[in-house]
Length: 304
Image (cartoon, rainbow, N blue to C red; front, side, top):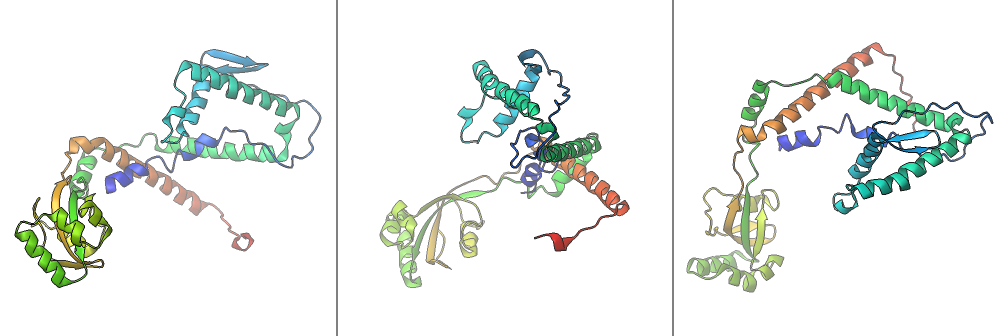
């Protein structure tokens, strides 16, 4: 639905690239550099000083930023790997941050800050960071009005409903006559699950025909027409209908969802989505203007 799509794209354009910009990557095939010692300007520690590695100071905010990046990359299915306690933070400081500082100093002593490949990588990262900061500056004051949120909700109210799910059981057989005979038995009071186990030819037969909760679009159009018919009430069975699997009869066991959420529950989602769309448009407008004023050449023949 549109509201979920809006939320999925909120940060994808602007902020996705920043996480990897401060990582160290060893350089293969390093070129010879000058033997002169580099003149290094060390950044001041951010926050309370928590460690020093020779002349490099490490602040609490520096550590917390590193840990936030680490935690953001922990797989959702492994939350236990996240760093949350003081002891875990101290271990990360000793085993990661300090070790990285030592290697950084060793690289400086070798003059790698003047290596051509390293300088190119630094320049590219600087360019990327400046673009990200520029986009933040362009979009930081963009807001939407209450009327815009209300208009969006009223326009797409139907699409913003919770998806309806129906719990369905099925019996599928090979011939129309066999299906009609089973339907007569059901109308006379036979148990649906028992007949599904004994007569149905599809895999759901072993579960008494139960398919569980499902939304539209999971099976054929013929199935959807029967299963999501407004005239099929809970506890009732359908007439015989044909699907790619054979001749089918279904029973509606229960249903859930399909309710309209009030605007108050969706306000924040819609507001964030509309702000993102405005931010995206502002960036696109600027890029369009810059493109018109720029000399852009593309040499497609060189792309292998």
